[in-house]
Image (cartoon, rainbow, N blue to C red):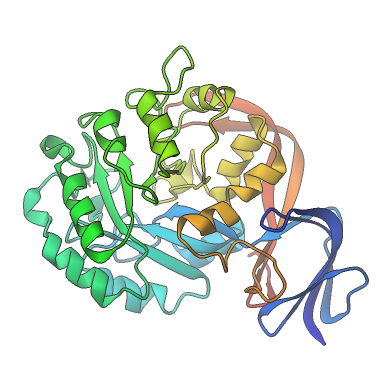
Length: 375
């Protein structure tokens, strides 16, 4: 007997090309069946709602209590529909063990981390104190980063490095070069943050390898990926051609409607939509992954694609094809979404606003094959 059946939902699973109204059943913590008239111990009618694979947020900060920017993954999962949180380098070699023991291992929702190059991770990030962890070379020890990445190789997805005027100060692109050396040594990808210059967009993007992630990829001027005339910059096109992954990472200062409209008009979609939710951006303008997805929906990207960029594409970026899918036998995780119509105010990270006619809202989550209702 199935443990749980979601009936009459509009199932959208881009990993399988499914886009139809049907039932989905879960048993033993896994997806058991997709079809009609399925029976189970717990049957829930989700007619009129969208059922997707469990959402994956590729850029979050969830080292709550251990870093100043961390938010609570469990609370965000209950309200925001995410079942896998990718932590984008909140912890470094000096405090990663605490992140693992006190947050990741006890968490009811999956947390998969990047390891920050800087020894203390992102240690001073708040409304009142802001110190870039890559601005002081004394905090960058590549040997320590390699040691901890190897010690936790079962968990660490890659090496995170933040460069730009805010994050690396006078050190410019140098921390990225160190991070790339570390990543090569341990056989992992890099996730690179870029804020305002220096360094330039070209210096950063031209260094990235196939499988590396450029987050904040639709950031506003300066260091935007597109010119004012709407042409995508050559180094961006070259990076995509060689397999660099372009991730939104909305956050508090890294997403612009102007950039996004020009990139979409040029036919350049991001590879992944993510929120970069942290202690500041959770209060706006990012709020959560569903809000960031809603912005793309209101900018004309179709629902199937928006879901693809937040499920199977995100899973591919972290080389976890077992996630972001509802294939029979896969992990029993799903997100139930209401698509609400109306007039909704949205803002980007530099104060530009937009009124959209749709908003995606979490209506429930399935974890380990069982209903895990929102708060």
